[in-house]
Image (tube, rainbow, N blue to C red; front, side):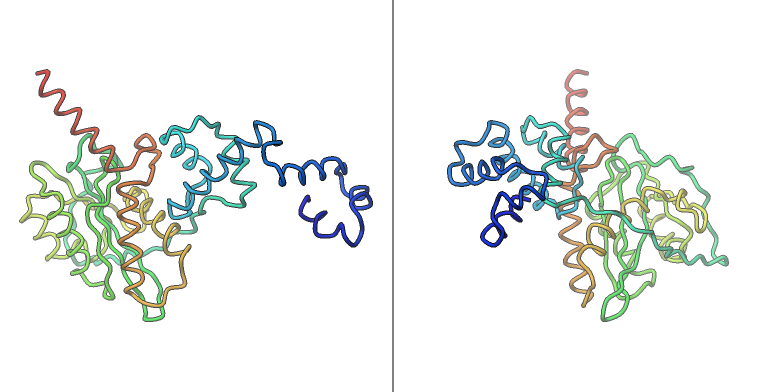
Length: 299
């Protein structure tokens, strides 16, 4: 409103415009005086100006996908004593908002001729320690060069992405590559369950043999039921909303792979996740191992 008055005051005058708009001329002139001399602003206005820059910075540094709650939590983590309603008001003033997730796409293509392991998870997707339960799934991205398929392996203790792969082909090899990356990254030892849906890639002989070779127990949910692989569906939903839908349309497979690489690094090391206490996955795992070390020292 102040900007509108300033743009048109030479043509119509300040007072005539203010008679039409619900604003007093003194308010407009006060804004002009503060613009010339910021020291005249109230303490609240001065603090808002500082916080406005910080809100914008936090939002920019986090893929421009954070909503009010996550911007607020991140600012609190950085030591800013700010109310959530203040963050909401400032984001509204800045014209920024969190990304909105769209409808998920079905990618599972079951092969009923293949033998299938039973479901050992029963929709309980929160492990008590790292490397106890991994979930896997993949999605597809439309590009000018055709479809690109992106597979993820997720450790359910802190929702950390431990393996991923982008491919032009939906054959078994690309989900195997994601599994191999997870095995190399984590080097799991002991009891570990790998859960997926009944997609033909995950119940293939090659995939199940690799799980057996690594000493991992397979678990498979039902077909077309997102609840039976809900955590993987959730992570893929975030990936589609925060990367694919936000940055598309996509020209090349290389562009999808590069942006996925950047997103996975941010997701694991800096993105705040509400289910684990509004901390990044890597931080949650570090705290777990620190507590284990403290327990060993006490014992």
